[in-house]
Image 1: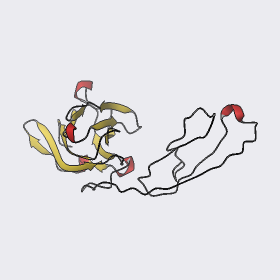
Image 2: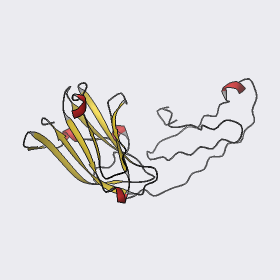
Image 3: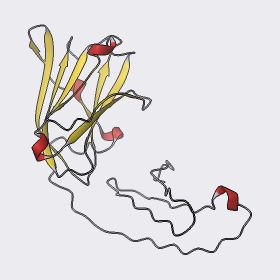
Length: 193
């Protein structure tokens, strides 16, 4: 659990032997480990030994938009200057760095119901496979891109626009087996955000 008592992970083994769990910490804070018996063993007294170890690893280079590693630190795109291109409003940002292992990059945009918005995460897959996920403010995933080719595109255009007024989040991450990589972000909207 993190210092807000939100579960950040747990072991998932069968419970017939040693439990191992590792967690990469990207945000400073106090973390708690809870040890509890498996549901069928609740009446038994169980002896156990707990080892906690810490390794320090170096994150890759940061980009000018850091820190945006967690949702609460999301870079707010609707605060930035969109440029009118024909009938669209476009925001183009370059020079993002994403790491493996490493934190995610989070972006936020405030939308009105029906807004038509497209997010293009632009990268060369040969340099590292990047995935992207689009969420509403409740954490429900609305769209994702996880191809093994260049670039990922997520949008509301094929779904009738944003489903409701509110803040939406774009999470960019490395695919688990990829190396550190760079990417650019292009946001296209049907109105000035």
